[in-house]
Image (cartoon, rainbow, N blue to C red; front, side, top):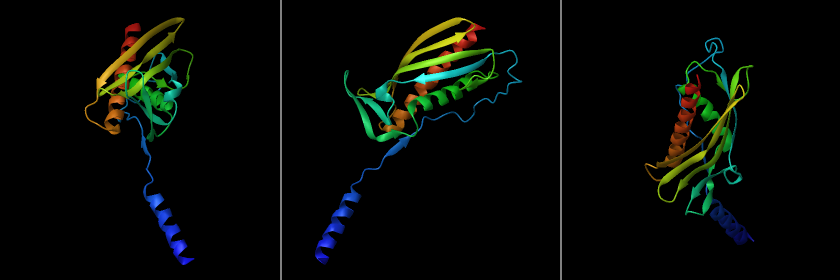
Length: 188
């Protein structure tokens, strides 16, 4: 009986020792975000980042990696710390705030006069050739005007690994935010 308990305990310990740990990732956001209050934004319309949508295969927890021109793998143990669409929206707000000092950028409408920004992300993954893809389109609405632009960035991943993948994805997302900011500035 004692021998059976010892063998059972050893098997249980062996099973536990081979458990693979999950690793969680969060898109980095700049720490020097311009602080704007409603009084300093003057007559500038605020920017409401209404939503950022992602395809169903990216809406899960796992980071996405493209292994061929037609095949995608979703990581089982390298996961987003919070839903990707929420991370994209929050980092977009942060990046737009930095790019448009003096403007109020928020995730909810805070006044009558505002731009409404919606973004549809269609690609946000690493790729088999060492490149990272950030693609989709954004729609900006203001006073009855609609502006729609696509974005399709392919950036080289500087080193191997998921850490470098997430940093490169964040860099592509920041470049997309800068394109949006440039378009907003050109409207004035």
